[in-house]
Amino acid sequence: MHDVYLFGQILGTHSFLLKDGFLQPDNYSEIEKQYFLPGGETGTAATVLASLGASVRMDGTWIGTEVAPMLKEFYADKQVDLSSLTFTEDPGVMDYVVIAGLVRSPMGRFQALYSTGERWWNIPREEDIACAKVAAIDPYFREESISAARLCGKHGIPYVTIDSRHDSFLHKNAAVNVISHECTDQEYAGMTPERVVELMQKETDGLTILTQGGGDMLYARRGEPVRRCKPFPVVVRSTLGAGDTFKAGCVYGLLHGMDDESLVRFAGACSAVAISRFPLPLYPPKPEEVRALLND
Image (cartoon, rainbow, N blue to C red; front, top):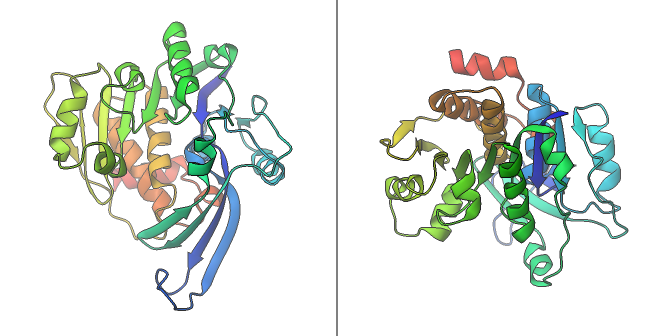
């Protein structure tokens, strides 16, 4: 048995924190710190959940030769089970992120990877899902993401998803769907945040949460008024992993049976702690830090 099953993106992330502001054309930029650590929506969520005290089994992206040693060493002393992952002979999936305070720019080769039409991730295993208490599913792995959601339904495992459209199977059957402003900009351009939540809450019995960076979080269930939650004020060191940490906070709230308001506030506090330090994988939110922010 494990507390949480995670299915989705697991990467090696090269992060670069710049010293004097973001990149400018034809100008030199000094790198203050740089790291190669686990990343991706699922990799980051696993790190945060383990720090909060949950046991995790994660699956998803195939892990290559450049990523595998780092990943195995990083999770060796954590409650994160890697036994379901597939390890390959290619270098593996990586991204590169340049960061300066509130601004970051990720780079990678994901368009090229997806355009091949080939699968570079696992097929979710029923026994992994059946042995969990709650789950989280990234929407990026086509039929395999839907398969994970169907298996959760079969075994009565509530799951959290992210950026899943209102008309998608993942949204309609999720316990929680977290929508980022990047998703609303792409999928619901021209619509107000309130209208997006109203559209989504009609399609599910689960909880819809819309995050807006430094703006208010909106959340609602079917038939309920849209409610708001202000973000927690912190000094921002880096926003890398903020959304993934919010997702992890929602999973933790679901695991512990929190009501909607408590879950949203807990996830918001987790995310606020996360953006106050760099790099997040080395300094993930601890329960006492989250509680202190909630009680402040």
